[in-house]
Length: 43
Image (tube, rainbow, N blue to C red):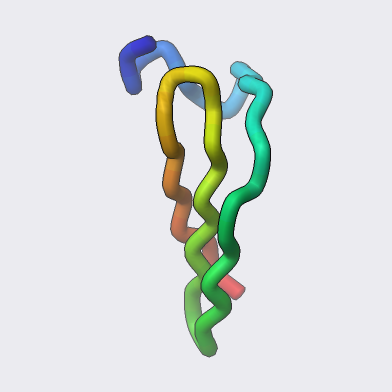
């Protein structure tokens, strides 16, 4: 699966492996059948 195939309208199944909370941003690691997807979000 290419990164271009993933956007806000698409969904994919996975399991949250780790959440690293920060004062400004947090990092979420999700394990999918295609590998780990890491997202950085504002907190």
